[in-house]
Image (cartoon, rainbow, N blue to C red; front, side):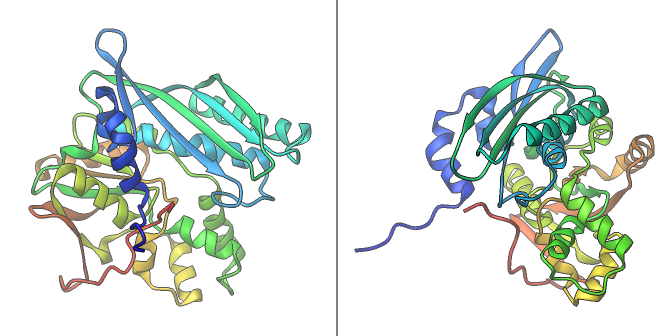
Length: 327
């Protein structure tokens, strides 16, 4: 008897769920849906879930868990250039998540609601004997036809990334005890980047009309650039030496003897990865300054398919693992 091939996350979506997709779902390849709203506007819908023991540690503070849950969804709205409106919440909790846990969880949500100017619109709750499962559906708005999608990149576009890459990967490694000899301040910075993503909403909104394509980095820089390439039917060249790293990440690499390139396949960065034509480089710099977020050019889009990782001499670097996979 032959064994059926194992299906990854995107193969499952394409085989079982894409045939069910409404036109507004963008073929289930863009992580959001676009639904017509009032004249001149569209609603942007995004759902993401986190699971205890998979996406966070069982002993993590409930308020911190709540903020991570909300922010990973807001990050996808940021990648579309959307302004968040509110969210729906589903909680599936074991008995160990008692009233004290819920009070702290709700306090974390309240803090981020104030930060991002949003409110809870509804949801559902249930119980489970297994690990806690939490889900948010975030809703935003964008001008009609102006959402920055994954499939709009053009040959010759410059590839940019916001912030720094690999901090969350190293923060998780530090929490697992895999990095020794790191200064406390550097360790705290990296761990915080793992626990609390920073959705780049202001930058995403500034990129509307400038960026041809965008995606937020959740599965890893190489993997998510690959998703953008696939949607745009293009290839990409990525220069390893140009990928921005924080001082804390550089210190952690030195302490752990881990390779720089392993950071490019780590998840949980939640930075924006986007493409724009070369003649708009000065406007990208202006958007960066206005949003107060650093942006770095790291490569170019080109004919072909997939991602080529290049060293300082322009020679290919083998890619053993593109990024995180749920299955």
